[in-house]
Image (tube, one colour):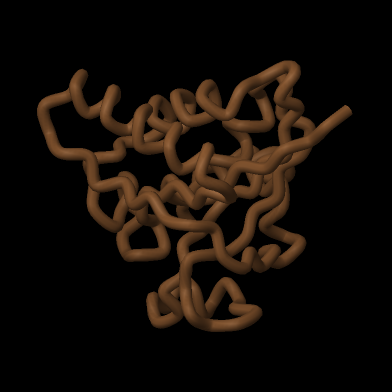
Length: 155
C-alpha cells in the first residue's frame, strides 16, 4: 500500500483528528503544530499565540481508497473557512484555517477546491494555503483526545 500525507489546520485539532479518523481510506492521523517559527513547541507555547504555529492534523491516507481532493472537500465541510483566526469559541492564530501542501499537485488541488467552495458561499474564505514545513507532534495526551475523553475541544 502506498501512503500519502495531507496536513490541515481547522481549529481545535482534537475534533479535526476525530473527523478525519472516520473517513474511509485514512490510515493514520497525528495531531501537532506547524506553520510557525518556534522549534519543538509545547501546547502552552502554541496556545500563548507567540509561536506562529497552528494546531494541525497530519493525515496519512491510501490514495487507492480516498483522494486528496476528497480530503480537501471534507476539510472545507468540517469547519467554517470564513472565520479568521478562530473556530467557534477557540480564538487565536493557532486555530486558523490552513492547508499545508507537500507538493505542487496538492497546491494546485487545494486552490481549485478552495475556489470551487468559494463559489458556493457568500462570505470570503480566509483559509491559508502554504507549503508544509516542519510538523511537531503534540504531547501524547492530545493524541486521540476526543476518543479518550469524549468531550469538546475547549478546556
